[in-house]
Length: 255
Ligand code: 13P
Image (cartoon, rainbow, N blue to C red; front, side):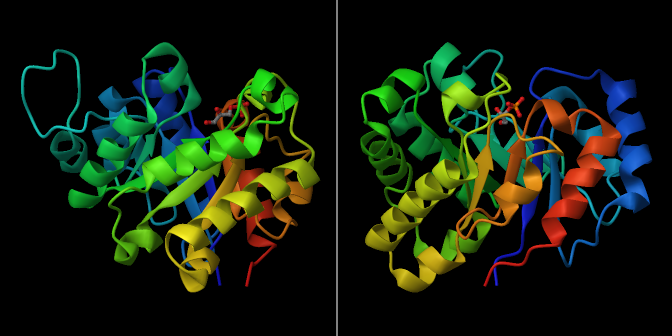
């Protein structure tokens, strides 16, 4: 059984007071942690405050980190620093990081290994651009991103890893991928995990869809075989929408 996940990626939004208000407001209204992993990935500067007030049913994550433990990397945050805030998760390889901050499949892999070594659970983002989809290169891109992200990953860590399929053309555009298209890509990613490890590991790994997910589209996406949850940007900023997304996700259990 794969426990569903709703992960909010706030990106560079919300100052501390707004973030705390959100956490208080969603508080007891979220489904139990035994049924769902509800996660908010927030700007690093407020992570400690959120962890202190997260309650029983919400988990907190970072949005990025450096792979090294310390050193002369002005402005960066290391895995041990992130871990010391009490967060459990960290988004790695988000397309905005790849696009604007020069992240590559190799740096994503270094960060994945560093996160796991520091007991942080990586949410690894992959996905193609519009141009790549139009040129029928989606699987090629996913193959490169997934196989490289998993180099030297120990199969025993698979339950701590979440993969998020986020086609770049669907992010923040209102153009959600059709549920069939999203399921096909998530199924392909699962087949790659089977090739890298084995069938039982591929059946266990949780794969999310991300890109313009809303309360209107979540049910259809969640009903799909290979989609175990959603990584949500815009719709995770509103308390009532986040709660509604979480409620939808628990209705479906994947075996
Ligand atoms: P939107 O839900 O705003 O399209 O963002 C998706 C995303 O990038 C989540 O990481």
